[in-house]
Image (cartoon, rainbow, N blue to C red; front, top):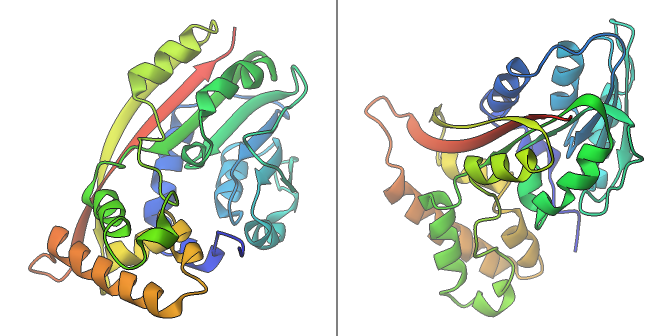
Length: 268
């Protein structure tokens, strides 16, 4: 199977996608000096650049498992104007095992939903923080929204169902804010957890389809890559279902509610 991620597609709606990161960064405690930072699931690099702008003296390493994303991110590597630096490395977040007391901040922007049972990694990640260091992340909490339920229903009911069996997750891959609070408070952290539903106003033809093609639909597209007619048929059927679920507004735009879950945990 080819690399799951298409950086160009992911960049669509970039302002909407980075807004939750900006909101997460606004809630971080003050980090002075040259803190060492891990950006888990850094993607194509632009979010890491935003992180570097927020922490101008930080020494940041962005980690991602996608060669395509890392190739794009390489353009952002190097020294930063504030005396810090940015570099990138390939890593499987499910197996990422940093040394104890290595980082002042471990941050993840919309990536942990792809790591099964990611809360089980929290003890190791908290141990990798300096005393008073921070674990901060945001994950989508919209797996019960029509954009996802329609995808799962269609995958299970069509001529492609055998090819797509097991491709999409059936359970919710993220916890609730209260669940994350309990897990991290149990490790001695001071935890701030909350959720926000953004009402994105999207422009263009079939913008919700365009959005999910850069994220949640990628496993389906990859699984049908060698069956081009089935791929086209699935996309047309899914497009029609999305049009009914997210009809255009009178001005031609489309409103796309999107729930996000945020956590900022300060290590003891």
